[in-house]
Structure formats: C-alpha cells, structure tokens
Length: 237
Image (cartoon, rainbow, N blue to C red; front, side, top):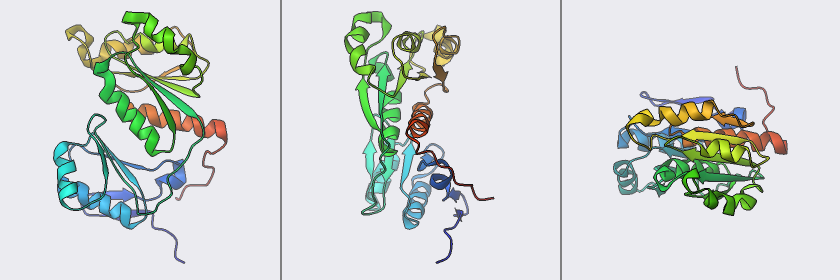
C-alpha cells in the first residue's frame, strides 16, 4: 500500500494531511477570507482523504452554501464552527476534563468556540458561564466543580480579572483568553490581554484576543501530555 500523501494541492489551497500524525490533533480551517465554494472544495478534499475537519469563524452564508450542496456537517452559530467527519469515522477520545469559564454572557461566542474545539478533539467539557468577578459569589458557588477539571479556560473581557482569580483557587493550569468585550478604554481586548499577561497568580498562560480555538488547542496538549497520548513519531521531512 502506498504511503498516505503529505498534502493535497487545490490550486488556491494546499491542505496539510499529516497534522494529526504530527500533533495528535485534527485539521482546522479558518473560515474568514474563504468563499463558500472554496470552503466546500476544501472540506470535500479532507473527507476524500478520510480526514475530519473543523471550520472556525464560520458564517451563516458558508453554512447555508454547504447545506445546499448536500455536504453533511454540524453548524453551531454561537461558536461559529462547522465540523465535518467521514462516514462511520470513529470520534477521538482524550481522557480528562476541561472547564470553560466565562466572565459574562458577552464572552460566550469565544467560550463556545473553545468548547466546540475541545469536543471536536474528543475532550469532555464542563461549561461555567457568567461567573465573573463583578459577582464573586457566582464563581465561589461553582469552584468545587471547577477544581475537578484537569485544565481550565478562563474567557473574559473588561478588565480580565477572572483568570487571576481562578488561578489562585484551582490546582489545574489556567489558559486565559482575553475578549474584545468591553467599553472604549478596553481597546478591543488589549486591556484584558495586558491584565492576564501581568497576572500575579501562578500557572496562567495567555492566548490572543478572542482566540477560543487557541485556548482549546493548548488545553488539549496539556491533557495529551498528562495522559501520555502525545504523539512521539518523527514528522515527515
């Protein structure tokens, strides 16, 4: 049997077919900038090679086009994700639990992007929405459950204090996601980004503004390293 190809050239895109082998995580497609027709061709190519794929920042227009073309997929409008899987493909399972916590309801789209990404990669998710520090009793009421998680994702805008508070209360690593939620002096998420980067609590790592996908990827690698499921194969040259 010939070896699996490394990539697929579509002319406008060169698809990476070996990412799961190198990193242990499936392929993700960034939706913005791609026409619905381009996205359809990309997803069909992945499926033809037996590869599942997750689209982030997907639009309603892209979803409607894929549905009209008859491509089976899962679309979650809040998370703005589209997932496609080959028929009868076995879904991945990664042991562990990740708590996805949000400061406020306005942070939900970013948090749901993280939760959907985790689910796509086979991780069990516990959601804790709207537990920001403006009402600290809400966080304290849930802290017992959050402490059971193997990793915690803290999604917050405004001043971004949620990540620091969580990191001081839980034993698991905290992945902080600043969001662009807030008023003018928040500078589109820069204020919470700087707050999280300057956290005095231990065990906080920070991803880019509104990057729920990136936070989920970090959490997956934490779980993979903890459970010994990290890929150790040599990548192709």
